[in-house]
Image 1: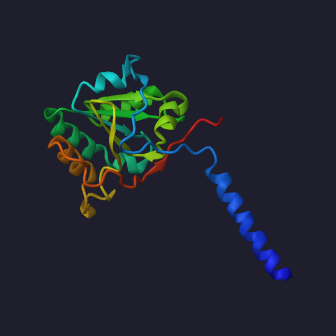
Image 2: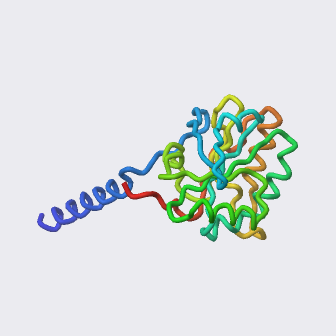
Image 3: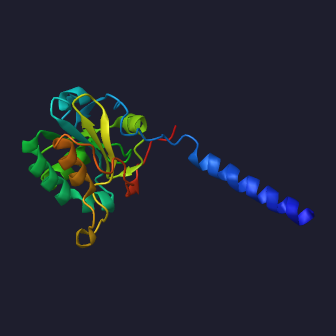
Amino acid sequence: MKTYSIVVMAIVLALALCLVSFAGTPESISPGSKAPTFTLKDADGAEHSLNEFLKSKFAVVMFIATQCPVSNAYNERIVALNNEYASKGVTFIGINSNRQESAAEVKEHSAKHGFKFAVLKDPGNTVADAYGAQVTPEIFVIDSQGMVRYHGRIDDSQDTEDIKSRDLSIALDALIAGKEAPRAVTKAFGCSIKRMKK
């Protein structure tokens, strides 16, 4: 009986620890939900709002980083995607929510990697919290009505030679064609967003 009680207590303690670990973790917004609006500044101090990007058919909101090796592994792919879809009515926007990455660092990183899209700084990770973004890179595709149509990863492998599913391209191609994304949710992976301690 004593052994049974110890086992039960151990299970209860483990569950409690799990709850503590996930307490305060924002829940990601799902496809079909209204995207939270935002106004953020780019590295030059110019303000940009979500609404201006929604003048396109679709806006691709990307939570990215300057120091995360996983996010950096996607820099060339992000540039290629932006180049491919810009003429199809798709606007790409980067958001940097990491507390330790300054606006100056974001500007230098964007120039170094040839980003032709706006990269906005998210002070206090308020936009990351509103979207429930957890990692870099993490993607949200939003239509012109402000509805989330895809959430997840760019593709299924950090290593370009191992890619089996180009999830973001598949979703965009379907949406541009007036269809639903075949997989509206995929599992994003990468470095955790380094949030401000509250």
